[in-house]
Length: 434
Ligand SMILES: Cc1cc2nc3c(=O)[nH]c(=O)nc-3n(C[C@H](O)[C@H](O)[C@H](O)COP(=O)(O)OP(=O)(O)OC[C@H]3O[C@@H](n4cnc5c(N)ncnc54)[C@H](O)[C@@H]3O)c2cc1C
Image (cartoon, rainbow, N blue to C red):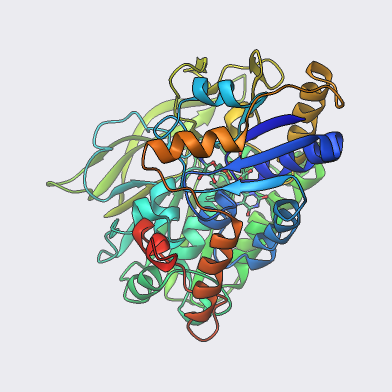
C-alpha cells in the first residue's frame, strides 16, 4: 500500500488525485487536504459567479472524491497545522497543489492607498472567500479602473458593470450583489501597458461585453494596427482582436462605459488619503514587443482601482521556492525526494482549468516512475495524520461534512441563485455543529 497526500483541493489537486487513483488502483490511499472545509479552490472562489457552466466542472471532482481509496480532509492548513516535513514522515509522497492565492504587487507609489485592491481580494469578496468578506470596496465614486489585460480583468470589469437582474442564475454572494446594485460607478477604465494585439483575453469572455444590459465597451480604433496585421495572429487571438474592433461599431447609449485604454502604463496612484486617480504614461511597442514609455502622461480618475496583474504562491517552510516566479522550485513537478508540485504552485498562475489536467497526470506518472504501483511501504498515512491533528486540537472535516455545508447553502439560496454561500470560516464549522 502507498499513501499520498495531495495538498489543495482545486483543479490541480483533484486531477492529480484522479490520475494517482487510476495508476495505483486499490494499492493506494489518496488524501486530498485543504485549509477549508469546502473543496474546489478557485472553482468556488475565483471563477466568476455568472459563469456557472464552468463551475459545473466540480461535478467531475465529486466523482474523484467518491472513488474508493480517495478521501477529502478539510480544515487543515499545511504549513500552519502540520508541516510538510511531518507529512513526509506519514506519507509516501506529498503533492503540493496550493495554487497561487496572493496578488502580485504593482510596485508603484500609492498602491497601498485605500481604494486600491488586488483581484484576489476583489474576486474573493464577490465569490464569498472568508478572508475578503469585509473588504467593502469603495463603490460610491463614479470612476473605477482595472489594471491588466487578461481574463481576470474582464471578469472584474463585467461584474462591476452588470445589473442585479443580470446576476440571475449566478451564485454571487448577497453582500456583493447588494453593494454592486447600489454602486455609483459609471466608467470602468481597463488599462493595458501594450496594445490590442498583445491582450491575454479570450474571445468568449470579450464577446460577453458586447451584450451587457447597462454597459458599453469602448475602444479607440487609432490604438489598433492596420486590419491586415491581424492576419499574422494565431486564430484565437485574431478572433479576440476582431471582437475588440467590433466594439467600435456598436451604436447604443448605455449608463456605463468600459473603456479599453491601451498603451497605458500606471506610474502612480494618487489622492488625499485614498485613491482618486492613476497617473498613467502613454507607451509604444519597442522592437521586442515590450512597452516603452513615451514620456507623455495623463490622469485616469478612479476611486476604486483593481489590479489584475497576476498571482504568486506563498512559500512554505522547508520547501524550495522560486522568488522570481512566485512558485515552488521544481523540475517538471518534482520539488525534492517524495515531494512534488502541481497546478499553479508548479507552473505559476497561467492557463485554464483544463491546463491543470495534463499537469496533474504528468506528475502522477512521475510519482509512479519513482515508486512503481505494486510497491509498498508501511507508512501510516491518514491514520497518523489524524492522530497528529488531534494532539494539536485541529478538527479535520470530510466530504460528508462538505455535502452538509453545500446542502445548507443550496437550501438558503435566494430566488434565481443556485446557492447562498457562507462567507465566514466559523459559519462552515457552526453548520457542522463544531
Ligand atoms: C479570478 C479567476 C478567474 C478564473 N476564471 C477561469 C475561467 O473562467 N476559466 C478557466 O478555465 N480558468 C479560470 N481561472 C483559472 C483557474 O481557476 C486555475 O487554472 C485553477 O484554479 C488552478 O488550479 P490549482 O489547483 O493550481 O489552484 P487553486 O484552484 O487555487 O486551488 C488551490 C487549493 O489549495 C488550497 N490551499 C492553499 N493553501 C493551502 C495550505 N497551506 N494548506 C492546505 N490547502 C491549501 C486552497 O484552499 C485551494 O482549495 C481563473 C482564475 C482566477 C484567479
